[in-house]
Length: 101
Image (cartoon, rainbow, N blue to C red):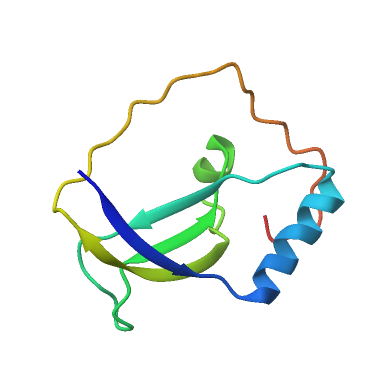
């Protein structure tokens, strides 16, 4: 019921993320990680991108990918963990500027 994956994020991408957080006055960012069953042309099956709001997904805004990698070990089974709202609310996006996310 587990796996181990590697993910490579370029220094420039990290700087862009930090710049965006500072410009928006935020303390953190939601990162989504996708693990596919099959590898792409670069032998990678893991990708990470900045999380999107429901409105962004419905508007079909493109994802801002931050890194790729591969699963290096798995026992063959990964279970989904049910979402529990712990009282943390997503902050509304206060400004629409030229930042990638």
